[in-house]
Length: 322
Image (cartoon, rainbow, N blue to C red; front, side, top):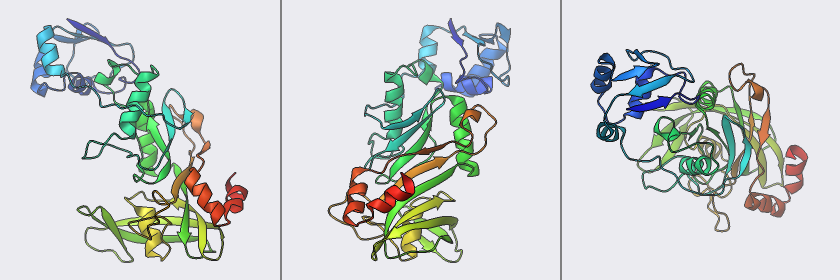
């Protein structure tokens, strides 16, 4: 017999959804049958699977060790270890300053991503246990391109993950970026377009008019200053499409400095000078209500700051953002 006590990261979901995670190798018919026969019980009673779990609920599985191991699987949550630049952390969320070169989410080539580093960090600090990972996986809620730096939000509790995900989906959480672009821009502008993605080449194209298989994109930018050749921009990401800021600005004739795909690659730069520097939380009423209206920023990487100094734009950066 196996007994589990529902914790806060497992509460709020249907009982059958929980069992599908706990016994991930079992067909659904198996645990429905076990519930009917009272070989799986909830708080000592027969269950049908549609019950909403509460923290502290008791789950008992009257199964042999062999059966449990067979259906629970032996694979562990992928994890890796890398020192993370954590801007903010509480019991529900983390805000991490992602460096250039790190994937936000797992790729096809097996390269460790921020998701694996996050799991490793939470295990190392004791925020999660191997047992917790049977039914809950922490994750990031937004993505940045491999060579884009800056803020990524991650959920370390189920409630935090769900509320963060909803904020990004509804676009209530405001995201601002800094970038250095080619050319001179002096006026704030709201630009719209339609994005088409070439998955084979991992590249997107922006069109002025809607075409088949395109998605709408919206971007707003605010020039902070220029040196006659290049402009430091603050960009608000309205929609969140792949490569949106990079491709959208390039389509306007103002590619991001150091961008090898949509602009001019520069040998002294490792990645484009695009940094997710600010997140502004909306008014919240749920678990994360204590974050209502809070603003978090992440400092730009050294290579970005050094380039601004070379371009005589460092002072403008400090005047506007420090």
